[in-house]
Length: 204
Image 1 (cartoon, rainbow, N blue to C red):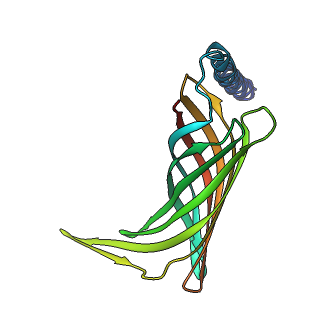
Image 2 (tube, helix red, strand yellow):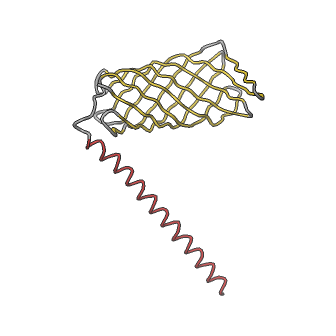
């Protein structure tokens, strides 16, 4: 009987600990969301317009797979430079890169694209399709020797992304986004998708 009581007390203790941790995490999430909602209003009268020059980059993680190759976790990164035609439409040149590492061999899918980012209504929600060229290379190391093998063939690149832009300063924006990319190089189909944090800077 004593063992049953002790077990019951332990279970209730663990349950209350989990609940407390859950409530603490909920408070943290609420604070973060509140911060992201309030900060833009503080700078509302001082925000640099989207119309004009901008530069940005993103970092994230996802999955890269190809015809005949199993999907594997990938590092995602990109660089964007362009200009805004108005507050809703941005045009840019964009690199989109995905790299996987397996048994000391790094395989990368790289693309250069022309993209258009459109903001839905008067919110920070956007969609960004793009088209361009892709290529791949493989890097392997043995001791102090690094061998890089590049594919001479370039292929079609199609990319797409959606996310929400939070204005956190006069020129700075933080954007969580989901992105997808397709490439066909020398008869091989590549697919990559994942989540990234994008950092954008608008200049007058």
